Image (cartoon, rainbow, N blue to C red; front, side):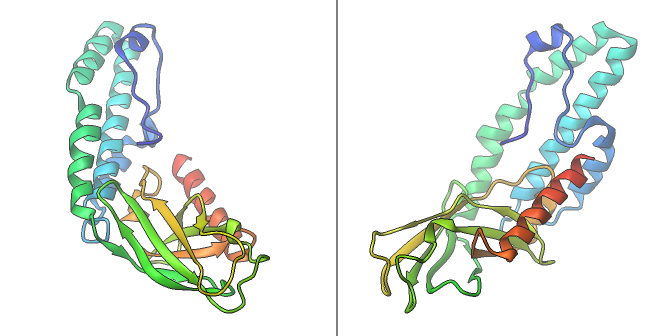
Length: 230
């Protein structure tokens, strides 16, 4: 999972410090927030599992920093013990794969932003690796000037706030015309700062990156991340 920084024993002995998911100052708040994340949404246990792991890493980081100020040897012992538990490996190789299997085949409500000359052929549907894919068919009005390469997917929560964006779409070939298809993909990757939003995933919308809607979504995502880190 991105943004999860794991230090080895060598780094510890060199006296390096780190900030795990959310920062040590917010470790208790992070734990409380994680415990309140619902698991009855489209993504089931995934967002909460990510938030729980982030909170535990932050708590360990905070404990290490606290001990290091008063007893470096005890801090070293604590961190060595923590690493020996293999929490990160278990999370990556056991927890996440088990959750991924429960998500396979789940559909995510899919929409097309106003002005996109297409219709939905298949809603975003998850596989067993958190990859969601959808397919669309161009309608009348689609031409070679249609900016399909600028189309991207934006995920929204039930409050109408943007959560994250995907990398873009793929289309069959030129010339672009009515009846031809294109696809979109979205790797679902909750992080510490947006896990609570992913728990309330409501829909994914295909839109043009040059549109005001996308710019607003991008600003929301950046603001949410900044607010969480601060």
